[in-house]
Image (cartoon, rainbow, N blue to C red; front, side, top):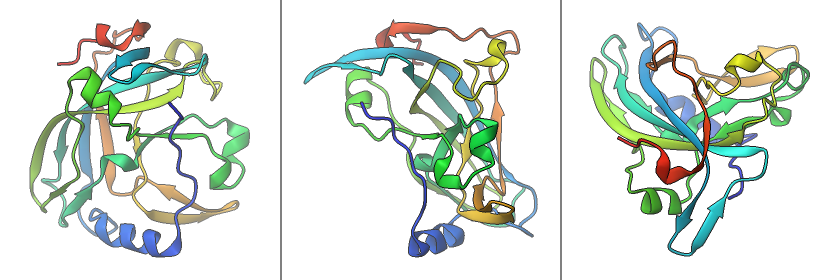
Length: 204
């Protein structure tokens, strides 16, 4: 499966996302997306044959538990396709956004069909509301520590969200998770490993 990456949004899409991503400046407290990292695997059997990741990549499964918008003053248009993991090196971060290594959620329909899971749906959470999602997102990503971070944390991933807002930096405009925070609920002593068969993961 080809790794899904977004690099640059067109101006109309950028404007639309800026309007729809409800938690922005002046809207009170950020929305909080709680999630659990379930596991990482190399491949699975689909109805059309085996599906395998690249040698230095794997499929990381995350369970989105809740989207808590109770302390925000604006509705939030939650789109799981905008969730990503940043695996950029410091050298890439010093460059323009399109040169960053951002790994976005896969939209491959073989994954939920083969794994028997529900993917997190697009939802609008009203101001002051909270949504129990309890569904999954899957991100194809590098498992060889491409960002060059601490080796002991190389398989523990933090999610981010391309909210469509931007800020000016020395290298231009970048997308940031403004108005959205992520809470990883795995126990502190959880050790992430990579298994060969995705169906060995405890997807519940």
